[in-house]
Length: 276
Length: 295
Image (cartoon, rainbow over all chains, first blue to last red; front, top):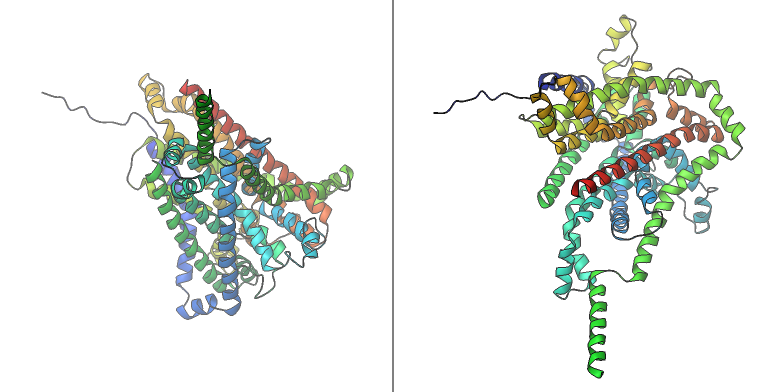
């Protein structure tokens, strides 16, 4: 004979905390986003299509997507290198360097923007030397890439670092004792283990760069067809009360962000399954 | 004699070969460290230095005068007012969400976590646009708002709500993994011993999540003060009224008042440095606790 004890939750507060969470999320985030998407659907397909395929807008997609892709790739390479150096080697000031990696995450984008343009202008600390080689960064597409690289810098480092820390030394030793040289071990053992984390960081850096505004608008100079990023066009159209145009382009950016989030979630699921 | 030398030599070459197969040679190590540090110097240290140099180049007096300028003071006051509203709200949200997610099982939990992460992925200018379309004069609720003499866009409420949206995930993202990792045994023990829910939260949960919470609040605060893209869309840039600190920096920069722009920037830069210092402190604290737990 057994007595079925009623299973009850010992911990209280589910109703209160869940209620507040959903209320706040709904009011601040879900209802506004839903209303915004609804607003876009009130446009005729033609209005929407014309707005998102204007030549100037298409040029901005090319720069925003292309620039973000290049910046994320730079961050993939250097982020992996920085993570490797921070985890595997000892050098003076390592803790400080490690802490500084988060700077782009904490420093306001407008501050980063004026700092970067001041550095890379033709009279700036870096710009004046690049000028000698005929390289111009400020007010060119290269400047946009520099700003997007800056803003995405922490992501690859911070996703790869913990995975690299948890990587067991035995794997590498096993590979070495089976006769592999160091390069082969890095290529065939370490890189595959880091792959999900690398791709997650890459996707995060790309997603962040895609929507970035503050750090780019100062260094880019905002020349139509050349150095205008898509977020800038959204601001410009909103300021001219062209709400249809702004909302149409904003919807494209919003959908791109949701898509990136799906990709990132998938990659994170892959990472945790590998290293669970 | 000869045999022992050979044995030693073989051992030596074996050790060398082993080292070559398991670690990088010194020259390569130095090259990698050098390249990484050059990259970080170029992208992190130089921008930081240029802000501080620009702010203090002409002396403390000029820096102080730039901060004390009425428009700058108005921007600082407005920014402080906004974080005084947004940060407590997002703190409550973060604690409530983390409590619900970490202490209970329910359907759709992964979806809820993804939803909380989402504002982080949305471009700040799109965030601003969403609220302009809702509350702007040409927007959905615009006519109703203006007939009731209410202003949200180009006014403080609009700035508050876009910043709340943009910084919504930060505290929750710190607390959710932390509280999930800590489980619920301690709370259950406290409750079984007769403590009330609130008492358990204050005396058991809060001390456990203290450091993560502090970092979350500091990060949320820094991001709220520095929010730019979303505020640029909804504020209307009315000097002395709806200019937050980042917008004031933009105005100064566009008017070629570089020293003043960097002076106001230096305040936000100081805040960013405090934020990453606290993050290091929290991580150091965690590492020490984990080491102690292992012992």
